[in-house]
Length: 237
Image (cartoon, rainbow, N blue to C red):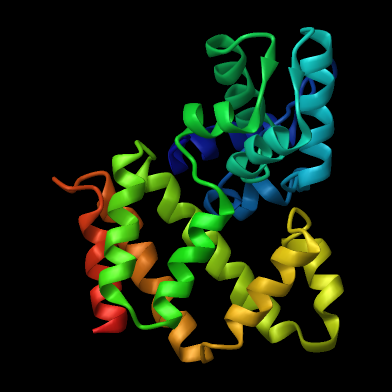
């Protein structure tokens, strides 16, 4: 949040700090930090948490709060946090504030406005079948059930990203699975690989670009499903 002039003013203090002071600078945008500042600091890069670590932390918090919540529900919360522990704890707090002392996967889906992975799989199947009517009807069914279109599109993008990477993994499939898709069961992994084999790399890139564009438009659209419908029509024709 500092301007270049403010950084320059800070520089003198960093070069000759008081003996009793330790400065800790934190940023999520390291590329905006002047090199003159970076060169005078010890740099530590923090990375996103893996799914298992986030689930473990959420399970500990739930235990401390005497809340019973199943593993699948914890994994869904962790997935929606996208590797950020603070966001995961915030989502868990929302869930615990609105439900009783025993929380199920269905309750978490309702509160977070997320859909099951099977809904994403079904949508991809309609694209494989080149069935725009079926895909659009299915998307509208999700809307009628009250699910958040922004969350659904994000899940769709996340699934397609995994599909693209796993398709290119070849003999390193298991290694890539542990890195990008540890939450997938063996059946789900088999399905995503099978679906990926039905698309060329160019088709996958086009799908990702269209759905990323759709996700950016969902919040401002009069009909939240419209950007997705347009993406489907453009993809299938």
